[in-house]
Image 1 (cartoon, rainbow, N blue to C red):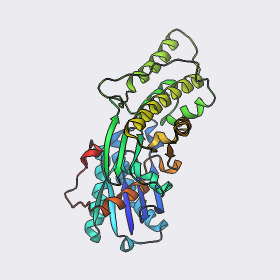
Image 2 (image 1 turned 120 degrees about the vertical axis):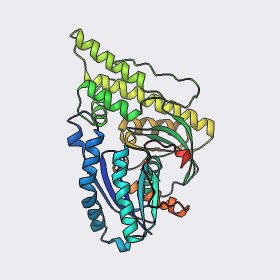
Image 3 (image 1 turned 60 degrees about the vertical axis):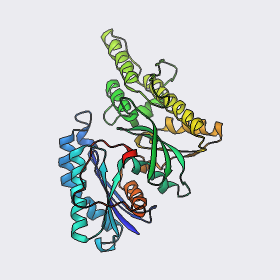
Image 4 (image 1 turned 30 degrees about the vertical axis):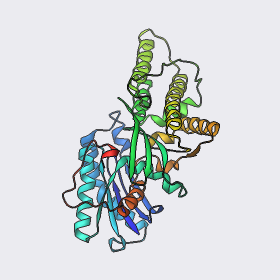
Length: 336
């Protein structure tokens, strides 16, 4: 079964052709990073306009690279939530047009479910049930994956997502957008013990995250140093900050592993590409005898292959949409 998948939830216009859930025939991503880094972050209106300009050629290239036509496609999957509403609507509108013109069924896919499914592409042996840590620019969740299309969120951020925290700290230090990869590189050169950052605490759930206080602590450190004429060491700040984030993610996730009794853990989302996170999580899992699955780096960020993979399982479960499908900016995994 071949699925044409479209992803446009933020600033990546992507299309992929995926066969039987895990065989990626093509995976095209048109990035807008060079434009958005001028503003230090994603500008929603610009993102929507670029999606409109890119969507046609991205889909055509995905079909061409897969050496197939729309006639060879069995279904069309598209991200419908969550995300920037204007950006989502570009992909949804195009997917609905393709579906209506071709008569192919339309499959609505949740963006976070897509990130989780990226692990099935890299690791076909991974099967539910298991626990998944989803960490990206817009999301930080601990999710029980009870089936391929059924989820229970047991932990989430109360404020900023981990990836957002990385980007804002990077901008404060002086790195360009997106800053996560620059902090990762600088952390390898720095001393993680140079600065002590307090791990934020939250009440009400032992599995929930908070990153806004950590972000503010780094910003205040940098600004106070600049006001006093004290030179900051970007490598040391990066290393100390990254280790603090890793400690928070590992502690919460291992606590959830112990609570749920799962022996399998997956990590997904853009921050799963961070070398510090990957190493810290692998070390923690090895110590406890937990089987860890990490997506290939090319499937960590937003892409359409992961939407095609999840779309396959959604199709098998009977999920369909019609021309009334709309974008939803915020939607819990448990409500799909």
